[in-house]
Length: 108
Length: 108
DNA sequence: GAGACTGTATGGTTTTCATCGAACACTCGC
DNA sequence: GCGAGTGTTCGATGAAAACCATACAGTCTC
Image 1 (cartoon, helix red, strand yellow):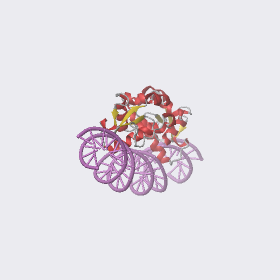
Image 2 (cartoon, rainbow over the protein chains, first blue to last red):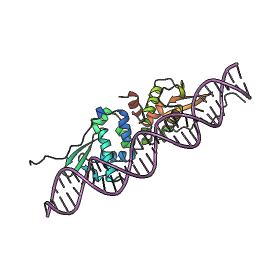
Image 3 (tube, rainbow over the protein chains, first blue to last red):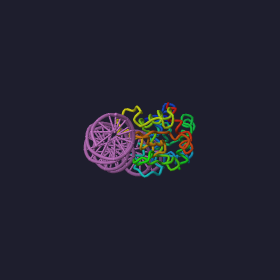
Image 4 (tube, each protein chain N blue to C red):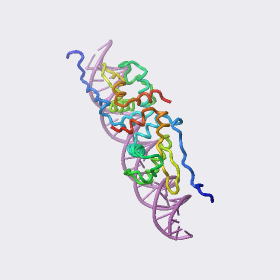
């Protein structure tokens, strides 16, 4: 088969514009997800696969958290071979929810 | 006894400056609490007692939600006779979490 | 002080959500 | 194709949180 064709289902994404405010807040209100977002913010786009994030949960839970972040319009994912690399949707999310991401990244 | 003296314990408040980001997000991520905040935002300070808010829960749950909002630095309460009147801590909360309150008030 | 009113505290039920272990699907290198 | 590596799905478990009904504690009016 031609190269570049994946047989794996592409992850479903939701654009920030289609995300209700409360969904975005709930997504960011979890400590594990907040840490994922912060780590992702400190990395280059598409440079980090899911497994490279250092959070104190198993890989099943991690996968679940990434699904929540995707559904909240916070993260975009793309398959690269066996791994799934990530990108924080900074501009799109910030256009939809101005200031929100910055609050989480600033931390305390 | 002199007038103006209450025998009821004053509600405990937390200043927004002492509230972690995730606590603020979690407080606002609940639909009932978001509605309380929105209704409160549309009313004059100290004009609304807890019972006057139209949310689809019993008064016990309502009391609980107000306690959460207080702990998140979103609401200030004061006793006036038998009722407890409320005020949205707009400026203080906005100084601590710029833009966050506006996002919730704007809704969608 | 009796009774109406407002809100809080308590105890218990239900729901929601984070988590894990195990099984599965896909990709890649040998 | 086989085995290692990566991530998702499934089922079950545990903890947290929302909720209710009831009982209680103040405040006010009469």
